[in-house]
Image (cartoon, rainbow, N blue to C red; front, side):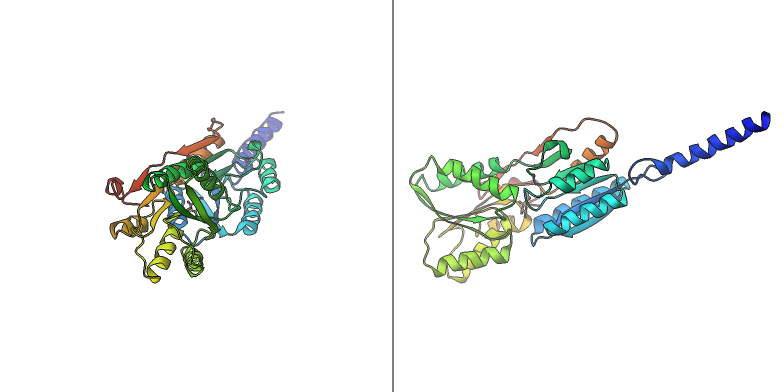
Length: 315
Ligand code: GYE
């Protein structure tokens, strides 16, 4: 009898030792976490700053980060890979708004929380923890009001669209057009995608100029494309910031430098420094604490009158 008890105690102790390695996800025996980040492959300094913010925060917290940088199809594959590896949480910057339901359901079934970083999706809210981003329609309205004021309610605007399938591009346009609707003498003469890229933005504006399109303002959905527009205008012998006003979104350092040179007029801030909020949301979820469904960063407008007030002169 005594022997049997002893055996049972040894067995119980052995099982207890096994328990930590049997806990859900990839949480290691020492309690440290592994998080996957599916970032978008995109030619924009904004994204590099965001990736750095995530990497730095992971390092600060001692979290192992698995980073994947790809386009949409690759992002879905990366998520499946993270799930197979049993990560403790996933940060996803979704390239497009739709196409996520299936893989998000797989993550949910595996008990892995997914946080939307910087953009939203149209998948059911039950499939993801939270969206941490700016309010893109608000950014569009801020840009629209600035344009209406500068043009005194009359003039021509050309819009450089981001990726038409991406949440921030759709909403930045909607917010902007909402304001334009109350100014019948402002005409939006062009709206074309520059795919978030400086190079593509330049090519689109070059084509407009070659076709003889006239505009007083260019509204670009991000600073990168605005910088491309500036390149195109200069190459055509025009004076951006003066002949054509330039407003965009993001507030990257290069936009502030362009303002210093008088090439650019305004940018609506959109912070890429989302790493700390992203990990906080994942850790709270793992601890069973509630997290708001939408965590919205406040944005400010910076133009030639106040850009020097920006705390870091851009991201
Ligand atoms: O504004 C743009 C980037 O999703 C908020 O994506 C982000 C946007 C950002 O390409 O520069």
